[in-house]
Length: 354
Image (cartoon, rainbow, N blue to C red; front, side, top):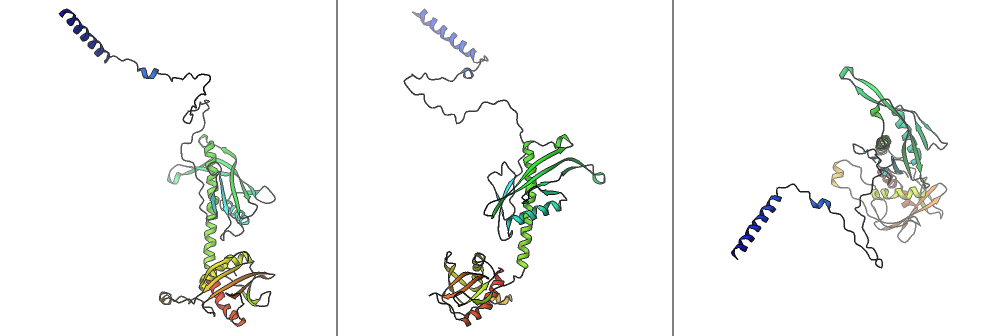
């Protein structure tokens, strides 16, 4: 009996020693040999869905160009420019008509011409509408040497197409730049697909900056320009006293609100279909600070503080502006004549064309 216990103790000690030795052996990790277990689905049962959201697709072995720097971004620095949905792939930008551009298409044509003229680069229209252009060779240089011994070596040259695509309504248009030809004299100047787009976007950004500068120059000129007032007293179609401007009714409608601010009118409601403003008038007061600064007093109308209607009507000469009481009755002729000078002063202060 005692012999059996001793044998068990000896066997257990040997087992522990053997297992302890295995700790120091370099055995392969069995986890690397595990395989995905597939379930055997009976024929009468549907196979469960296998989500493939995170599956890595098989590569076909084709090696593509990988850019080693961030792509050049389209910079919509002009107030009229807007980034399009294709900006990540195409060198393209949208322009919208505003007060600084005027008629959009002639403005864009002029700025494209001015940009390449300043860069001394030839550009030619390729269609009768002059919406598609091709540039001459634009050369790229690299500076070599030091100080007085610096020299510029031409490394490449390229030609581009510039396309203006106006929308039917004429208020927006897209401008796209496309590389036509590229020649290089240095292997380092060879263009990859990513570099082609970068060069196209760089040229497009130059055109956008040209538009931005032109807009700033126009804004400065408009700020310093004393507007010519074409408003004149006259009669409307019913023979009532009114003001007449040569501007169209749409232009007049869009420019009246800045004039109302100068005259201290408050717009309560509008009826665009009837071209009617419903306003309230209060006498403007000149503040102490304006008096000390020597500013001109605000124009004062010869009417009582009350509610009024201002109605626009189309006419052969342009647009007729009629001042009515809140009940819709025309103001007296002498009142309209006396209100002419304050209206002119307000138009000049608002710097609009009426």
